[in-house]
Length: 338
View 1 (cartoon, rainbow, N blue to C red):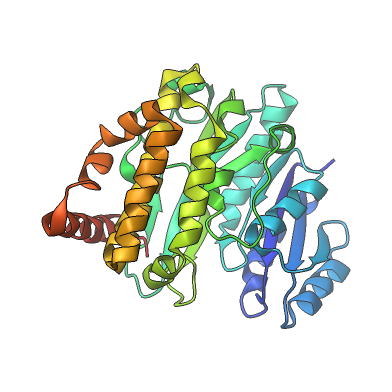
View 2: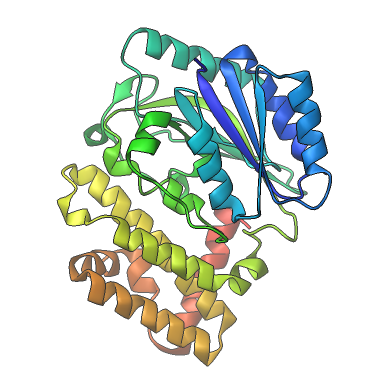
């Protein structure tokens, strides 16, 4: 039985996928690496198969018709045999020393019979041309290096949201909670780190810089202009998340508050990029999104509107739109995204 399954979704990733694979190989025989070739047209398949021949006990290659990042993750999860599951995008990588520490800790927790549903570690923005790398940790938000529950979490800063980069889920939990990411859709990682949360009962946080998140290519999905162009997909994901759970029924108040805050962030992202696009059509879409939320769940609408993000997204007129843009630019500089 493998300790950790790492799935690498690949679409035309030949130029950079080796770094992700090589970094994960440091996990040794207890690591399962599943490379999902999602309909690539370059030599991604040949590179993946070459690694599989060299490391047949660690690497598996699965090829499929192009279904998008979410479908590649779905395929990886369906085929995963490891106790734990992690997604590593093909242009990202992991720190080998940190991976060794994480693997040793997971093994120890499993041996003691107290392994958590969700294991968290830090991630680092490997931004092109950035002089200083921005580390996202969970200091002052989560207890360190012990098992804990949602009732023990503390205050999350805006930069400390739980993202795909920081998560290692118990594989069985993901399969049991029925998560299924939509095909041909960007930004599905938000569903991945949101929908399973109410099923998570125990957590563990290790303060190591495991995941290296490469950012800065012009064609990346998180590039600002790309996000504006794909705003309809962002809207789709946000609505799926709104419909995923009745947050009033979440027993842990702290988890409920965190999930409301995450949805407020999603609403803000949609609103910001619709405002930045600036056309009448985009402004109408923004209005429709907030009306949709109000129709679907008035309680959730009121909760989100009561937060700073929610209030700032709905200041009327040109002044309100200017406030949103200025706030966005400041936040981007502080946290280093895009």
